[in-house]
Every structure is written in structure tokens, then in C-alpha cells.
Length: 81
Image 1 (tube, helix red, strand yellow):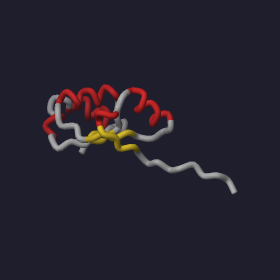
Image 2: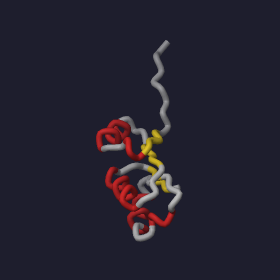
Image 3: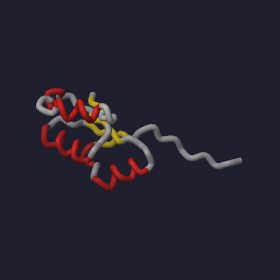
């Protein structure tokens, strides 16, 4: 019987634990990376730079002024909630 690879649909990681190496690890394995709780503009911008696939926030005003960026990347899979 063939050994099955574990199925990981996505990684949900606290924002302070993220860095380019962590993102690269998951992306090389085709696993999207979601982060939380992103409630400041500084952290929001950093997460966009890291190219996370999704951002969880309780401060939706963070995307004001980023509407064009978010719209362009939403087509590529960026999720905001």
C-alpha cells in the first residue's frame, strides 16, 4: 500500500511567527498562508510585503487606501476577512 502524503489545505499562522522563510516553506508546497490578527496598518503592510494569501482582521478600515492593491491581488487569491 502506497504511503499517503498528509493533506494540508492551508496554514493559519499568527503574524509575529511569519517571515520570508516560513512563507516560502509553505508556498513551495502549494499551501496558502493566512495570518491573524492583523489590526494595525504597519502589520498589514508587512503582511502584504510578505505575500500572505489571506489576512484576518477586526479592523477592516486597514484596507482603505489599499483598495487598488487588494483588488489586483484578490484576483490572484488574496483573501481578507
